[in-house]
Length: 380
Image (cartoon, rainbow, N blue to C red):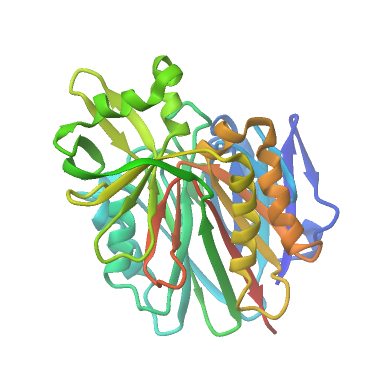
């Protein structure tokens, strides 16, 4: 696999010196991650298209861009991949074309199914989609051996509009899935959080998919506010500092759910993923060192089944982690880079949700507040 990277920063395009020059490769796939104000620009898309005319170009808005061991805002990071023995197929749909998010996921997976399908990378809208229902749909007809990873586009800390595109300038409501085919590609994955749980365990007694109404028979928003203390006046933004850990019957590991919005009139809380009635939840809070260490551990887990360093590592971390870590955010990127070393190219973005299996469970899950890493190694 040959990789070329470009960076649009301060109004100018730069070639990344440690990668192949754009002229020397003919990629099948290009990933472009950038701020909402840039990634939907026709001029940005046209530059990428003119540089890599034969590639499938997948783009997404972000809450921050990752390039090597650095973190950026208001830029565009482009990663072009030329595979030697791996076929890919990219498909797109719009949320508005389907009755619900479950059908979106089911539709995309059905478009990609084939005997030699190895893995799927999903880059999704982060505004309209219900991430939990999306991954449930993706899992519906997914063969057990096929891994699904990816993430939901971001919009900085605005939580208004996200943009995704396939072979056109990114726009609202799009969800893209890329299938990787054949035995020559090895795709690793891991997703870890590093948050500390606190308070007693509670049970979801009333919810509507990702809208939480009651915990232990009490209004969930009122109960949540009791824990916020000095952060109460900063809602809903401060809710990112206190996600929920959820335990679903029959599952071996906990998931993390972060709050997207609150409704003071209806006394409800809307999360980035579903909270089924009967699941058990606990509040979580940040432990800075554990958050950063989790990134290194995720990098380690993602390469446990490979003998050689991966050629590319795709890092998708949650905007909530960025808000918590603030000036230390780059440390979690560096922690991953330290594991991979100089032989692995890094790219990625800060998201509104992450998609990955929980090792060793082959079923993909929606995660919040995690560092999720997907690694790519092609043998020839």
